[in-house]
Length: 35
Length: 373
Image 1: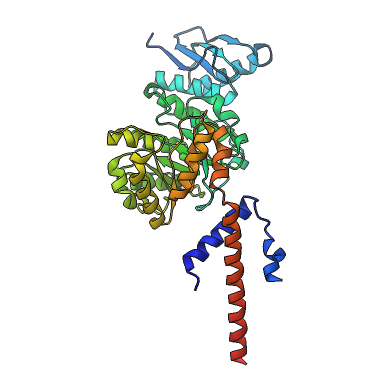
Image 2: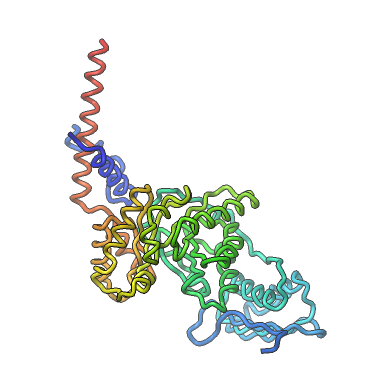
């Protein structure tokens, strides 16, 4: 089971990385895990 | 000094973008000038015209004005002259420079506050290009960096700077003074679209509520709608103990900072590079801020020449849970910003969690749809 704070933190980190330009906003579309 | 004369501003070999202005009121003779400036040929006439117009607005018909100019922009000359007039006459009229619409931008409650650059409130040369450094916030400081006898003229300079300088999207911050002087700072500065007010040496929730209430009244009176957020600075042992109450004192509090120079002085200990003497205080402030849902912000790193020390300090700060830090020199901004940014392994782990959550959600949705059929 995934603990909600872990998910919140992950979402926040992703948000931060996108806003700082470290991660492309469309990273999910390029992710092989989702293909 | 003659009681009919007042001196404001600064001059000297190391002074840039400022002027020293001496105003002496007379009974007759009209307005006379003694202007020393390297740019007199180009701007002498416009400086004299500006000052004459201002003196006319203040109802002064006879005076001698000496200006030792070191490249001051008009908003600086205006602040210096207004301060001199107010010193001599106590007049309450303000002479405000233009305020372009594009400087009246708002801010967000949860925007990043990794780096906030402190600028002394009575030093125009450091303010003028501050927007170029890409700090998350620019703090025009009226408290510790301004000598007590210069507080009034600094307030006018900061007011004019807020109306005239382009901070390029950085959060427009002001550190006010303590007590009644701080309330006067709010009266003068809140109408100039301040995004965030830093409350120094905050020791109890009442300090915050008093500031918040005054700001609400000023906003209501002036019809302004942009929010003004608060960042109390904890700088005493008592403040540390009451950190959670301070963090929750008002809904406009969005962050809480720690000031380690004054905190260590209050505790009677020496501030060290390792910072063990303030570990409890910093932990407590982080915990209080997180529990209250606001951003914990760390103290400045005082040695501007030691970039490696700063890098290590940021790493410790981030590990403790802080989400930003003060800067006292533009060169510290990039290191702080980089230090607080998420690391590669942190991003990769987060991506996996988000992808997994999305897969689980899709599976749950598919199951729900199949059950409904």
